[in-house]
Image 1 (cartoon, rainbow, N blue to C red):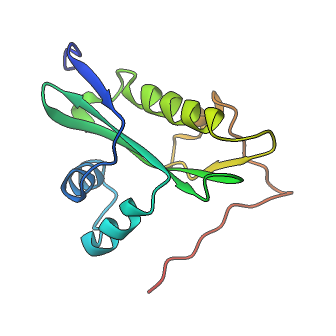
Image 2 (tube, rainbow, N blue to C red):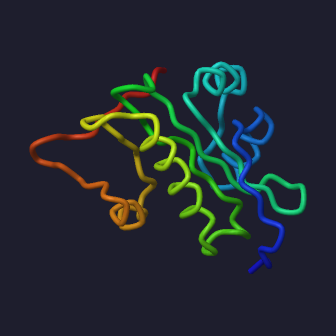
Length: 139
């Protein structure tokens, strides 16, 4: 476990390189960096977490910024996991949404396998069978 002195949350999107580094470090596979650059540019909001000058975490919000917000790309370097950094990221993102939305706005996310309980503490729920989260990957 790493000592977390000098931890800084920076309100900015990760660079393509930072996104790629964090994406691969958490085992999400390969990512098309050309697509990443355009995706990051279209984000509603983002932040990075830095420790002693190194980016160690990220999170962002995509959507229309009014009615629909989707929390996306929450990742923390494996050696920094389990120390509350993911919690800090989620709380900061939810704080942004709370201050930039009105009652009735929809906040969604997809949780990595096994992380459901982490997000449930923030009020996220599986609404099956009445509502099902689905997605398709373009081939």
